[in-house]
Amino acid sequence: MVLFWPPLDLQGYNKVPKMKKILIAVVFVQYCLVSCSKDDGVGSYVNKPLSLEVPSNFPELVYDLENNPLTEAGFELGKELFFDGRLSSNGAIACAFCHEQTFAFTHHGHTLSHGVNGGIGLRNTPPIQNMAFQKEFMWDGAATHLDFQPIIPITSEVEMGETLSNVVAKLKEDAYYQKQFKKAFEDGEINSSNMLKALSQFMVMMVSGNSKYDKYVRNEDNVSLTQTELDGLATFQSKCATCHATDLFTDQSYRNNGLSVNPRLNDKGRFVIFEDPNDLYKFKVPSLRNIEKTYPYMHDGRFATLEAVLDFYDSGAVDNGNVDPVLLRDDNTYGISLTAYEKESIIAFLKTLTDNEFLTDERFSEY
Amino acid sequence: MKLTTYACVAMLAIFLMSCSSDDNTEDLTGETGTLTLKFDNSVGDSDFIFGDTYTKSNNESYKLTTLKYLISNVSITDSEGNTFTYPYDENIFIIDEANADNEGAIHIILEGVEAADYTQVTFGIGVDQERYNLGAEGQGDFLEEAADAGMLWNWSTGYRFTRFDGTYSSDSVTDEALAIHMGSVGNAIDNYREVTLDFPNSVRVREDASPQIHIVADIAKVFDGTTSVNFSDGYDQVHTSAETTPVIADNMQGIFTVHHVHN
Image (cartoon, rainbow over all chains, first blue to last red; front, side, top):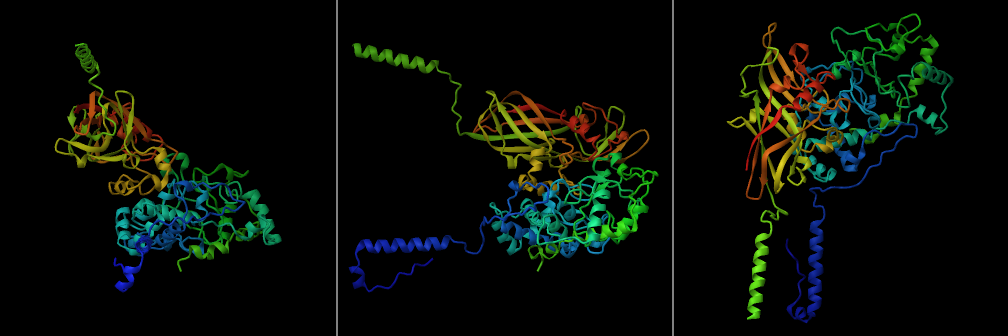
């Protein structure tokens, strides 16, 4: 650092009183020191909190923000990671590959998803929405903390096929991450804990609560439902809301709804978690928000349309040995009887759960 | 004369007082040292050796190719009842038989331990619920270490507390796969267990004294412990079952003893 001392002719210099010279020097040095201590572009922790808006018709927040406070820098870092293919072994499978925003962060049109090396998974990609209000994740509830959930797809051989250490090594080489990890976390470390916290911050912010239905129940913007939609809502509440409960449209329990077992996949569902026979073929009740966009449906994506789903409930359920008793009908078959109009109106109602604000929210968009 | 007498008496008094004060009270304030825990896996009376076949009480036999377990929350208590707990972020370790020295001991070196005379150690097997519930915030640099060592589940979330991999045989089967990967399952099954072991004699941690504690882990007791288990009953594959994992967790609690200490 070079001090530029203003040129003074020696005659004039000698005439400046000593105290004034010292003052000038001190002020000048202080200015230089202050300039040098400002952010010189490498990046340091930026504590700009981000606030999470909870819709008034939603249940309590479950994610503990105290362990991972939301900041702008943390959210931006999580977003960058979400769209980064380097989290996979072939550089091409980012989280966003299966979780596409337009389809409420599901894999559009795919029954099952394919990952690195052509690997195919067992289950349909679930949406990423309202994660902050849920305790457990994945169709079988295998992930019991949002922070740790990404470890599963990242390390799965049929999904992203990577290791945590390798991903971290790749991130460490990138100038953006070198800067952004420092901005997002006080310790500034590029490690998997911070990477996962950033991803959680991104996912926690993904709240979908502004559908037509939401505005209707909250009396916002003069939104009203059509008669068909209202009929559908009424039927839904009497025939579907036991399992698809609350304004999250799931009671977050694990249930066997009478789907036949696909012998090619032979997916035992929640059974793998505790090896409890009572859990055979049980899967997590999914939220029905944005259901219009998250086709195909069920844990293996076997139904392409909502019509197929309701036909299944009406007349397609089978006794696979452990079906939820709530679906047992008086005639000893499993299912939920629905008339043609009930099916039509339920589907009309379900479409009111589409939240276009969420699906186009630029905060969650790649570009 | 009188002055000299008084001076002599005073000096004598001081001398006597000095001699009668307790020579054992050192002031250890601020002093720290290094303490090493050496985990030594054995099977009954024998040292554990990879490739050797061991027999259980029910005549099933096994051979292990991987032997690892997770230890955390190490704390030591001194002769006055004061407890020193190793710093949280570093207080989690993988004991891996593959990392043992020639005498079969895996070293856990604890630095910055407050100087004192210690009489017992407490540690946890696995990861407690509190650390897990902190999410990524509570795991620091350990996540990657655990992942690399195969001590993190990859089809669900959480740590494997034990990893005993190998094969087993019995009257009816030969060299079937054996995998004991017990851990907690979210908050639903808490398989974390704590162990407190007394030292046969005081362990002196000082700036210039680095004691070692030789802990023996009797692997035979994993299978013939509080409960004797049969591989044929499903104990050949222990992962997240609500039935078998707590049994193994309880057995693990009883495998450790302090064999001796070096001061």
